[in-house]
Image: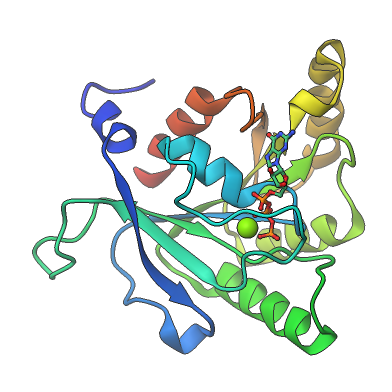
Length: 214
Ligand SMILES: Nc1nc2c(ncn2[C@@H]2O[C@H](COP(=O)(O)OP(=O)(O)OP(=O)(O)O)[C@@H](O)[C@H]2O)c(=O)[nH]1
Ligand SMILES: [Mg+2]
C-alpha cells in the first residue's frame, strides 16, 4: 500500500549524482538502494526514466552496452551531507549477456555488476529485468543463483510488454513465477511493465517503496 508521504518521492525531480566505474568509487553505504539489473538492452535505463517521469535522466540506446557504470540517481533537494542524505537511491547498471563493446570491457562490467550485487549492505532489492519477448536466459539464471547465494532479495520485472500480445501477458507472468518459485531470495511476484506505454509503473513504485522500508 502506498502511504501518504510516498507520492512526493516519485513526484519530485530526480538527479544523477555519480557514475561508478569500479567498486572503489562507490559512495559510502548510507541510504537504502534499489538496483536494476538485466541483460543488455532489456530496458533498465528506460524503466528508471519512466518511474521518475524524466525521459532524459538515464541514457538509453538501441545499441546494447549503453550504460557502462553503476549510475546513481536520487531525489533532488538533498545536499548529500551526513545530516542531509537523500531518502533512497536508484542504481542503473551495465547490462550483462552481450554488448557491442570489446570483450575485456564487457568482462569488467560483468565483474563490477556481480561484485556490487553480492557485496552491498544497503542494497534492499534488485529488480531483475527480463524482456517479455525473450524470457529468462542462462545468464539471468546465473544472476538469480548469485543473489540466492548472497541472500539478496530480488524481484523479476518483465519489460517491453507492449511488444507482445496483451492477452499473452498474464500467462507469461504465471510461467515466469513458476520458474522462480523455488528460488529462496526471489520475491514471489512478477511485475509486467512497459516503459513505452507507462504500464506497471505504479505497481513497481509501490514495490520499491515497500522494499526500502524493509
Ligand atoms: N517498445 C519498447 N521499447 C523499449 C521499452 N523500454 C526500452 N525500450 C527500448 O529498448 C532499447 C534499450 O533500452 P535501454 O533502456 O537503453 O536498455 P538498457 O537495459 O538500459 O541497456 P544497456 O544499458 O545497454 O544494458 C531502447 O531502444 C529503448 O527505447 C519498452 O517498454 N517498450
Ligand atoms: Mg542502460
